[in-house]
Length: 505
Image (cartoon, rainbow, N blue to C red; front, side):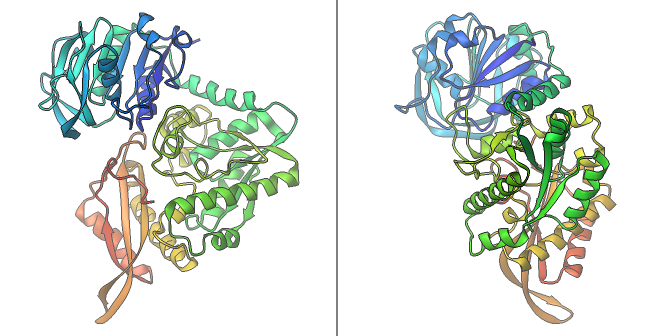
C-alpha cells in the first residue's frame, strides 16, 4: 500500500485542496475527522492540521487528540492548525485588531521547510486570530508585517499562519514538497492509476447484492467517468439515466445521445421539464432552488429505479461539491448546497454510490484519459448539477431559460471559434432579473441584462477571471445583443474566487 499523509479536517474550505496538492506531489493524502484517535494515524508519514472557520478561542472549538504529538510523526499546522499548536503547547492566541485577508509578504528564516524559498515571498493569509506569544521551546522561522510568529517550529512540529495550499501562495507547493520529502521522508509512490483503483473500489464496496443501479448522467466528465466504470464493474446491472430538467444548455439532449452512443452506455433519456419548472415556480432563493432540484431529481430517479428494480443511485459528485455543501468529516460552514449533495433528501429509497467523491476535477480528467474517454468529453467545461437554475437570478421561467440558453450558446460557440475554449476553465452567461434602458434602431428599449463569466483555475477551489482581448469580448457581446431577443446590455464579471464563487448562485 502507498505511503500516506493524514490531514485532520477542522472545517476549512481548503482542506481537500491540501490533499490535492499532496497528491500532486505523488504522495497519498487522506482526510480524517479531527476526533480521530492518534493510534489510527500512527502509520502516517506526516500529519497536517487544516485551517478552520472556528476560532481556537471559542469554547467549543475543535481540537485533535493531543497524543498525535507523541507519535514522533512530523506535523504541520496551517492557519488554525498553527494556532492550535500554539495554544496546546502553552502559547497565547488572541483576536487580532488587524486581520489579514489576502496577499502578504513573508520573510522566512533558514530551515529545511523553506529550502529554495525567496527571502521575501508572497503568501495568502485568511485569519482573524493570531499567535501573540510563542510556546516554550518553539522558535520563530518566519514572519509577516502583521504576524511576528507567522511560522514556528519545535523539532519536527511546524506551524504556518498562511495557506501554502492555495495558488495565491506562489511557492506554497514548494513548501509542501519540502515538508513531504525533506521532513517526512516520503518516497512519492502515488500515481494516477491509484485514483482509478479508489474509484473502482468505491463501487465494488458499496454494491453488496444483486440489485441494479441507476446513474445520474449529464454527459460531463464526472458522470461519464462514473458511468464507464460502473458499466465495467456492474455490466448489465447498470443503467445510466439522463433527466432532461429543462434547465440544460441548448442542444444538450442531442449531445447526450451522441456521447452515449460513442461509449456504448445505452443512456435512457427522461423528459421531466414540466415537472421541474412547476416545482421551481415562484422560487427565488438560490438555496431553495438547489434543495428543490435535489429533491425532485431523486424522486425522478426513484421512479425510474422502481421500473427496473434498482436499489442504487450512482452520482459523479466531486469533493468541491461536498465541502461547499457540508463536510462529512470536519466541522465546516456551508457555502452553498449542491443539488446532488446538500439538496438530497434525508431519506432515500436508493443507496448512494459516489465513486469520485474524494477527487477534484483535474484528477477525474486524469482517470478519463487513463480509461480512454474521448477528449471532447473530458475537456468540456464544468456544468452545475442544478443547471441554468443557478445561472438565472430570481425566479426560473421558460422565457428566461430560453434567453439564457441562446446567450450561453453564443458565448461558447464564439470561444471555440476564437480557439479560447480550452484556455478557460469555465465560461457561461448569467441572466440578471434587472431591465435596463437601451437604444436599438433609434428606438428606446427596456430589456434584460446578461452577465458573462469566464475563469481560469486548476481545481475549481480558487479561480481568476479570464483576461479577454478587447476585440474578442466585444465580438461576444455584439453577437448576444444582435442575436438574442430581449437583451440590450452585456457585462463582464471580473471577480476572483475567493472572495466570490465561480457560479453566481
